[in-house]
Image: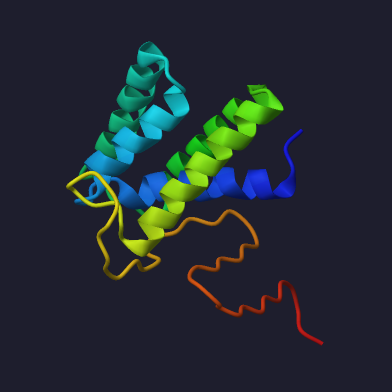
Length: 153
């Protein structure tokens, strides 16, 4: 069973896949994520790359997208990440989770770009997120965020 922070991390990765698909940052993001999830096994990395490519192709299809397709793909990737992390030994789980956090931080800051690496600056905005329930997102240094879910007294 994964802790709440790890489940939230998996959900963030699922949303990031959907957000990055079709953007200039896709190739770099796809490559980094496949390498992380492949964990040193080239066949596993290739399988993840193919699955990511199918996701991007389906999201780019001309069919009308009302958010349902994006939500379905985000949820599928969240589940894949959760399953992978559950299967790993604690040390390896921590290492993969740390790598995923670094990748997400770089995506949020705009540091993942077509050149493939970090170092870019730029407006890392939050766009086209898919949340399948109450969610709280915070990005940046020293931000303060107050969240209330449900009715206010």
